[in-house]
Length: 230
Image (cartoon, helix red, strand yellow):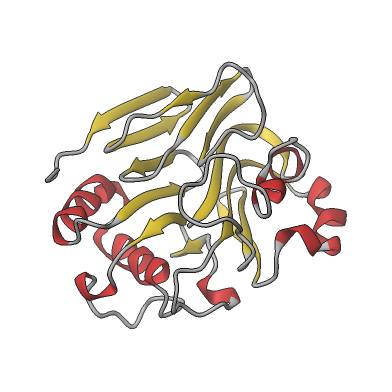
């Protein structure tokens, strides 16, 4: 459905994660290598990063591969915590900037890779868009991102067909869930990458087990199994 990526570590250029790798998000927008649902991610893109403790975003409803202005500026955008995504819209969902991750509550940046039946999501007036991922993000923000694992397990029970890989960052940590979609982890000397699929062929990429919560902090990485119906 989408591809997303998170970074926590030393300050680096956004382009070094999104544009420069041979199979980075720009390439994944038109030629993903490990995507099981959909062939393209051409329904928008977004990059969120922290300026100190303040989240900033650059989003578009156009394909990432054609955005020359972002390509020009991305090397100058630097941060220690980044959440970026390219979008393949769920059928029937609007293609608009407000439906494009990362979503924010002013403290967290959040992206959703997957799908969920909106009928299992509570009505809200706080979502940035009517699309499933935006409504899901609003629910997570309302419940508290620290309860992400519980929210995902509850929604997975309510919608057995849901795919709920969520990636969030607040400048000091990354949180991510695997629920029906793949997630990979790369431990680098200067930080940690979480991604829907590897952006290169580094043998250090680790496949995160399904139905797990991953937490990345400056102190290390923890993985916790999520309980839910099979």
